[in-house]
Amino acid sequence: MFNDKTYSQKMDKTIEVFSKELTSLRTGRANAAMLDLVKVDVYGQAMPLNQVSSITTPDARTINIQVWDLNNVPLVDSAIKKSELGLNPQIDGQLIRLPVPDLNEERRMEIKKLIKAMGEKCKISIRNIRREANDDLKNLVKDKEISEDDEKKNEKTVQTFTDEHIKAIDQKVEAKEKEIMTIWTQLNMLLSLWMAMVDGEFKIRVHVI
Image (tube, rainbow, N blue to C red; front, side, top):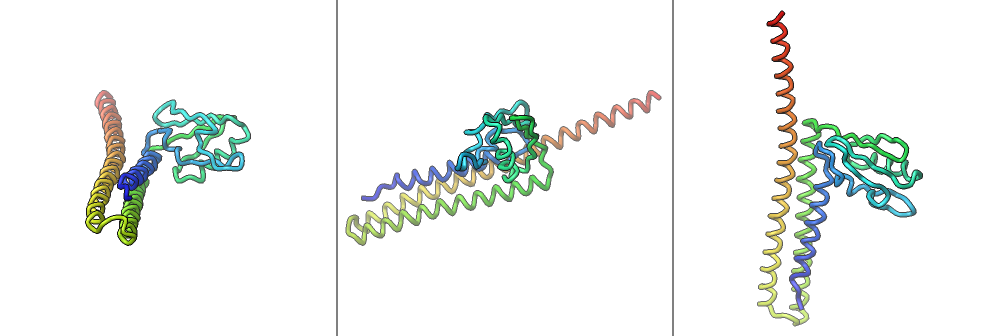
């Protein structure tokens, strides 16, 4: 028999992976989740960074990585440098500090393109699951385990799942792009405010003189 929940769950899992990938993107604010996709080659296998160290964010611009085994420090350092995060580790014994620089406009545009590409890749995965479901339905009809009417009914159900998950992807892409833009706008506002304050102070001093 055909179980539509199997394919819905596969789509859910695909969205879950996509969400995790989005969280790992650097947005100008320190976030331990940025390192979720970093794997370290230790003990003969690729292990998640949080399984060989403790990760904290003491402030909005710094991530601290306390590596449990001193021998793994160079391996952690190498794994971070090989990632696409664009972060430069600073080693202090078993502690690795990761300063998180502000995003410039060029990097912001690169991230927006990456977000769209990740979204399209996720959509392809969803559609592949739909195709897998439809192929299974055709085989069930061929083997006379279900009727053609059942096939059409289940195809509509799978298409509904597909549409819902595609919509969820678009919403996540839009939200992440908005987050990038919001941070950039806030930084520009702060910079403009600071420049206005400095300019005002300069004018006051000139006036007093």
